Amino acid sequence: MELGQNVIKGLKLGALLRLAAQIFTWLNTLFLIRLLTPDDYGLMAMTMAFIGIFALMGDFGIGKAIIQAKELSTTQLRQAFTVNILSCLTFFALFMTVAPAIASFFDEPKITILIQTVACQHLIMIFHTLPFALSSRRMLFKEREKVQFYTAVLTSVATIAMAAAGLGVWALILGHLFMRLVLAIGYNLIAPCWVWPALNFQGFARMAGFSGIATVNDVLRYFVNIFASIGIGRLLTKVDLGVFSVARNLANLPSDKIGELLNHLGLSSFAKLQNEPATAGQYLHKSAQLAGLVLFPMYFGMCAVAPELIPLVLSDKWSVAIVPFQILCLASPLRMLSEMLATGITALGEPARNTRALLLTIVTLPLLLAGIQYGVKGACWAWLAINLISFVCHLKFILPIFVLRHSTFLKALLPSLTGSIIMLAGLQLLREHLTGEMHEALLLIAMIMAGVVLFSATQLLLFRRQLFTTLGYLRH
Image (cartoon, rainbow, N blue to C red; front, side):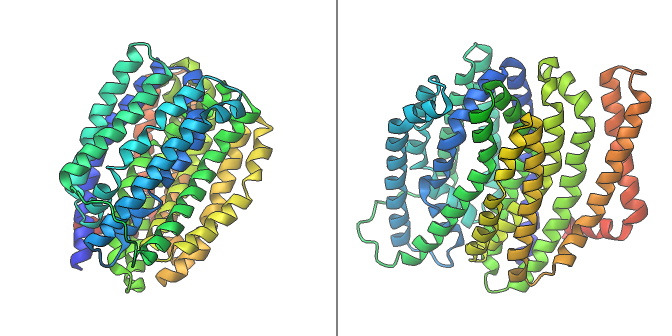
């Protein structure tokens, strides 16, 4: 119970700090979208399409291996540091060399220098991986979230200042590097790890094996997530890619930040339960209930108010992103739940099961190519279908290890999903009656308030017992 109490306390404290950071991130994103153009975001998406994969490979999964290891010696840290240095330098040199080829693939010469600039993040990651992993292993939730908060604030200010100065896509590029640098400094302050590189790798085989599979999983998941951008960038236009990129960034903002917190918390927490899969299953079940109570109403609500929200907040030039944003909002909870399952199984030392689910997901990616033939909206519908299939695959391969029945897991999500569907339908009817009767800003406020009332009423009337049980988890 002590571990469970520490996890919940860490989650509550981390969530408060993450919420504050999230507010700055949201404001930063909204300001940037108003200041920049679809062309700028298209260039950024092209720049990150391939280099992002290798950013995940930059440490070859060493960070996850450090967190998951039952015992960790100084020798292992030195060996891990050596692998991290070699891999980061290798990828830095690789992208400095292949940048022109990637620019040629997209038929966009401008991104050569952009890719070479972003490649500098690998030099920063040399000093980031070990302190970051140790902060997670030691469950320094409060300290780590403070680093995230200050990074979000400083990055927001710096990026907006550069965008306002007319730097265009360079504001996004330099802001990304600035974020990496601030994070590296922050993690070195809370969990410093100054060791010499090692020349002897005796006894490193187990950690290397785990980190290798973890890296493969990261690359496969990133490939799934980035495949749509590659396809749209290649088959459609730079502006289409910019619209898709903004719609997905907005749809992923809440889940990415919440997911980052839950993944780091889950990896370090579930790792302590490697020999107690049934107990880990109980925590996974509770986590799913809590996640569903947040994810489904939040995303279905965002889907419902998108026609008022996007033109009002981002301006009419982004109205074309409304429908793609709505579709992607429906996909985000499924993606987030799949990643929660993947984090849990990795922490229990069974990352190969996640690999199977990801490989089956990759088999479905041709659906995206078919969807792209119908434009950005078609690509988004295909993405929703792929996320649904991926979620089913993760359930099939991962839940048995947690000694958790599929029906039990899905029942944990049923109340929040049902309430969210009712809320979405109710808000659509409300729009039909109120459109033209009031200003768009007032309509947006009215719909948000109505959504809160509808979802709350559904939970209290139909699922009162499970609602209070779920909320009770936060009091332990």
